[in-house]
Image (cartoon, rainbow, N blue to C red; front, side, top):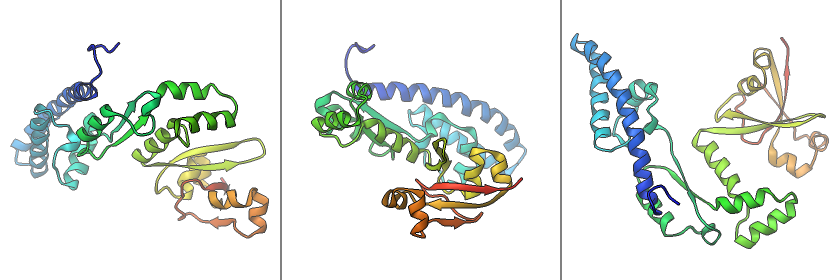
Length: 254
């Protein structure tokens, strides 16, 4: 049973938004106390910051989240982002439905999509109960059959992970050795040394070069040895920008 006695995702969204906006109001009020004193002295930067914060304050009081407040990018970078407002964070809406709506959604999902169309936010549909059943199946082929019966080609959890990574500007690269294969998370745009530093800071400090195999190349040839035989393994230096799915081997010296 829902705490409010019925299903209404828009009401639930508004309730959560209000709670987060109230928290952001506390943040902006505290900051304004300090900024106003500096602005009164004639400090130009403080006056700019005060104007931005007052605009945010009035918007929050009107039920508008920080992400929807119209501010130029310079103002956002300089004055807004450092305050880490909760309602300025990127948002992903996850709609939990039954099996029959797992592919196309339902009327409630349509309402959510319409409500958030101007928020630059993604809406995902996930049948959580079914996802739980799928994870209990140990056989991969059984899972595929289960999904196919529902009209799905992959678990919703996989879509959720990819969407979350995209939202947070993250990507994955792999390291493969005799003992284990591991996935590592790095920011999109990370250089090879920065990616190496995720494993250990010494790897970044003493970075020499990286041996890189593109994921589709690895998939095509089936093994590192065959990739090398085909001359498809690349040697990259400090300026190399890591790509999602790269299989990497780092050489370093400390």
